[in-house]
Image 1 (cartoon, rainbow, N blue to C red):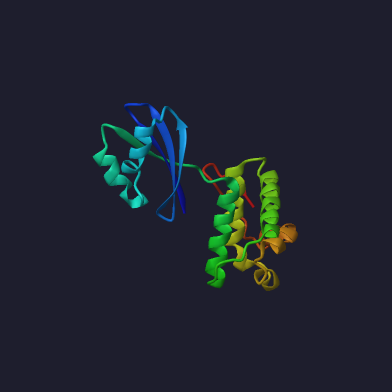
Image 2: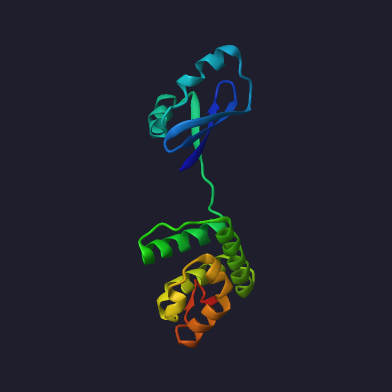
Amino acid sequence: MTNHYNIEILETQTHLKVTYRDNKFRKLEHLRGKIDDAMLRQLGRIIPRLEISMESFTAHFDTKVTYTKIETEKSTYTLFLDEWTAFFEQLTGLPPKFTGADGNSLKSIITYLKKLSAGSEPEALQLWKIILSKWHTIKEFHQQNTDLKYINSKLNIILHEIKQQGNTFTQGTNGSVEL
């Protein structure tokens, strides 16, 4: 997993960005502020080699350097992918093989579900969760085909089957997601 931190050297107003991958230091970027030769030689003293050391560095350089983890929200695509991955792993006990074609299929599914949800991404995600949670109620033939390319190609049929079986329900904070 990749994490990023902003580091500010308070005395010189120098801003840096540090990247860690799998807990190991990967990259240092100079964002703004002046760096002279003396500072350049000393930079290694304020940058932990391992991400798990970040807390102790933060405490040690408390009044001289600030360390801020950059938090990024997951995209709609990532949220949909996470739901499907968890569904697939639970159903098969195996991690899925994911290709570019699967990515395109997932994008198409997202677009269609957003259209059904009047453009609302949270409602589209909720609808996706409903579809995956009701997967066991559809015809056995469809149950065996959990590949995103297949789901995308048969999404209308799958939605219709779930709705026809009386497995419809409303979910959401105001009952806004309905199948």
